[in-house]
Image (cartoon, rainbow, N blue to C red):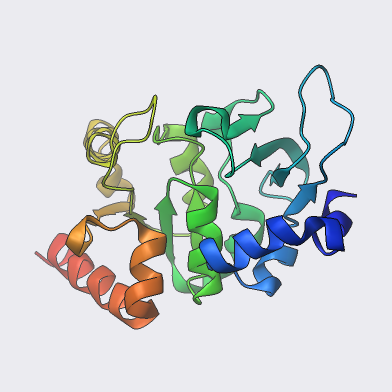
Length: 225
């Protein structure tokens, strides 16, 4: 129902935000089944979802796991709400991305759901997202079914109540070395973007080719020495 609402007159604020503020294409909005909960919608379990963008979370096979929401028009600490679920066992967008990941033998892993959708909108369809900045061995197990190269591309700035992207990347690399993943043919390739830009801002400002160039250059440094 929220997907229908997004494309109706009452969903115009949400659709405008996704298109103009987050730079997400209509095709990707539909592919990820992003929706909008109209103002005046009765609360669910004492949670008022009216005016929120709804982003369903799926497992790798396309089965729905939970709902995540964003209200970008309120104070930042009240913007996010999602159902409780095991964040360490799922990656946002994997059900959409796995074919491209398998074909390219690489996955780009970012933090936010909007980062995922924006990179997909710019042709980087091997992108998946964490629900936070904790990259777990379960995430590695999920991705290793489809690829051997994992590009760690976290936001440089700290989000409220979370670790910074730099800390998140350091934790991911510790995981990589602790489990000696390279001995299994799995490679983590950490990426730092110029200008301290988030991945979605960078690809919007500089384009897919520039980001791909950075990824390839860093890959050669890490894998080929």
